Image (cartoon, rainbow, N blue to C red; front, side, top):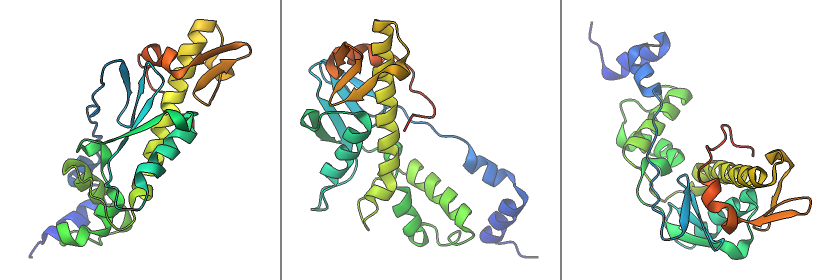
Length: 211
């Protein structure tokens, strides 16, 4: 009996074989952002400086579609930042910014043998391809589909870390703190992002982030 690559993968998928188990292994990436002087890195998507400036990494090329505004707006809204605090920088090429929806759309171009096995398998293979090849391409209107949720999650995690740093100062629960317009407040207590950034960066990001 002749066995094809496609048939082998399909059989492994149906039987929960070792090939699929390998693709399911978790992958993590070293934080690709580099802090400038007086900046503190909060994951792959944003940095907060001592002067309160929030720098957002944008992994897509601006081609008139407004992506260098849209993704920073998503982060500013979820973070509770003042829009006047927001700065933008190009993201370095990294698997942390994998454009999975675009990889899935173009799957027939990079692996025609495996494309179309099933929606779940296509998603899995596209994710692994996009991450391992640092596939950060800009095309086909996929920027929001690829990056809105990761941006929201990163900003929500940073917001919680800022609230935790403020709560530790004030001896209160961090859930009592409000984060809005670049400030963390609790009753009469208030502190700016810049004042809290160094302490907040030392906290472990909550999992899952509180969207």
